[in-house]
Image (cartoon, rainbow, N blue to C red; front, side):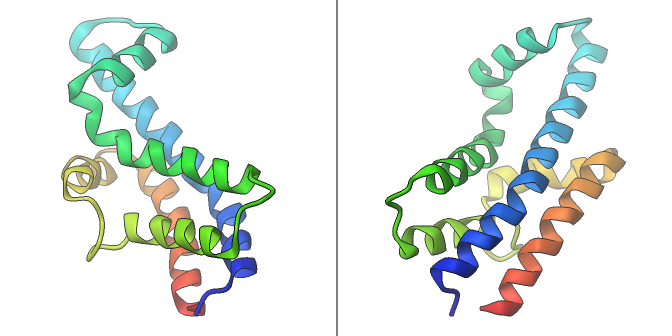
Amino acid sequence: MMNGQQAIEFLRDVRHPLLALHRSVLAHLHTKHEAEFGPTSPGEFLQIVINGSDYRWLTPLSTLIAALDDVLDDKEATPDAYVTHAKAVAAMFSAESRDPAFADRFLPLLQESPDIAVANGQVAQRVRSIEKAT
């Protein structure tokens, strides 16, 4: 069973790979968007992602990262809170438990973008290490 300290270490360890994965996905989607609709600034594209239904599938990943940051910043978070967040990260990248709407749009990107595939591999490696420890 994972304890609070293991969960904290995992969350700290997986945070940067998750951010890199998120950045890689956004960069790839921005390139695809520009190919279809023409140049857009990063700020404009971010507004499209935030407000557009085409990118709603990304919400679980964005929310997961925000929640991870919140729990790591919370000086009063309980060990259970850390474990819950660690399990949420592991579930997001587990074939049995990941969000199907996210997976349907995300998994094809692994074939389209080497950057996304590498970043996903970094996250998956950390998830596998915590799953072995639990």
